[in-house]
Image 1 (cartoon, one colour):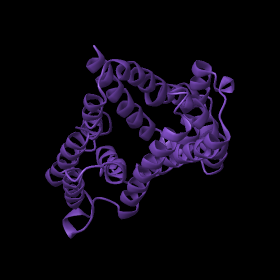
Image 2: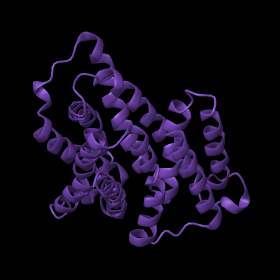
Image 3: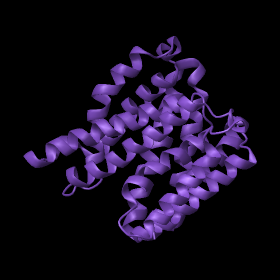
Image 4: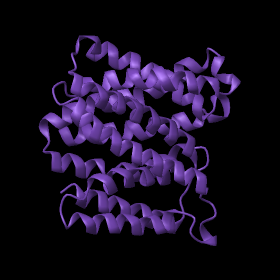
Length: 268
């Protein structure tokens, strides 16, 4: 059951990303970032009621950094999706936590080197890979770095409050990145017809996966949880094909598989 819940969470998250990308022509990447942050923050606050939490002076700065990292991660990731296939963007984003957080043992260096080798197949280092936009790829990698910072800051800020910290971090992120996203959004964002779809994006991308992941975490060892989470790039590539029609080349699939293997082994 917990494995099934986690797989549903992964599928929900990547399905939400595909749906969000389909809205880019109408609201823009920054617009969908603002909508997702705003609506998901309302949902998370309704569930966890973050105003009841009390943070010590030592936790406040990590909490602020956690919220900033969360907002930057979402903002940069959606900007990368403008020109990079979803599966490639997720794989590139995964290299951030793997590189910055996965070197506690000597063996972990092997998986980092393996992940970097996978980048050779994903990034436009040669003429045959011109289909991948260099700027979009750089934005996805930067989103991964923000993800790593989000994890590090979250460990310090939320040690006593657990997953409820996400609600407060999301609130901080929305205060900064929702106005920014709206300022650069496409005109279609102001149409009421967008609201139901944006609500679905927030549900699929935040409320549903966060809730299921929390349930799965209570039943699964961290090692198994991390291994299963490494399937996200593969799920993103499948979502690419099914919902966006963005088929990956053989080289890109090979690079994605290498990064999935490196992430799974690093979680052991």
